[in-house]
Image (cartoon, rainbow, N blue to C red; front, side, top):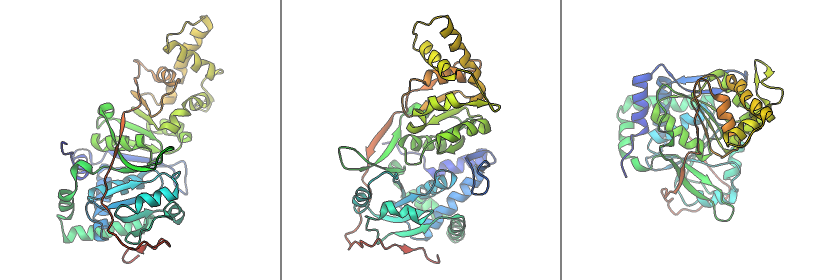
Length: 378
């Protein structure tokens, strides 16, 4: 397999070429849910390399596994990239997995670090014997503390990340997801996209909607790192309207949950506080029928053209809509987003589910009480 450019090299290149450009944005904070927070590529690089060095200082070695359980957004992206830059493997687990299945998976691999933002997120891991893992409770202060540790480590050893980068497995450095299956045991896999996302450029602005543990959002995040574009990331489909108005994206990526609810989002869409049409569902039905080349009567043809009234809701410059789930309304959404030229709606990005073989844990006596050692100085 051809070696991939490392996450560290990509981050350094983007910081060099587009340092002051916005790398990632998220909506909301505890004090102001309507606000937006962002990091430039320079800021993201500094946070990631300091976080990576801090993980190494705490004992994380290349090839080991780091379980990350924090909310969707900038911190998730920082931790995911820091883990990869440290040469370790980020492992994400969806909340709907069975704790017994999680325990079975984690008991077989070498988990070195568990990162959570809140104690309640440990409930999913209660069946796993992680006596050799450290627990890192990642709130704002502890994240700053870990980065400070990393900065001091980099001052002492300027080449610490270069050595970790050289030791990592370049062909297997991506994020690993846990996948529950209805008729079989849960498994670990690394999603890999085809060239469906390769048209992204550094000048594009991406709106991503969905959870970090979704395979589609995972490959989009990797495409964002490769392209060096701006990415706004929200988790809930209910945030899409506000996000579109704020970031005016060139590309919109919806995970399967948001894609399934796309029709309801379009029906409820407002422009300048008012409904975009008196009969929005009928307009979308007519536009979908026209896209399917169905025979239309005069009224239906008129309704199909009315879908253009929804165009401002998309932000005015969208070039592509990608859905992780097929939906009949996709063609109508495309028509609604048109400005001067048609906007392509891509088929769901092909996502291969490749099973992975992670480092095996040494045979030790497991602690059923789930005893985790804290970080030094925590």
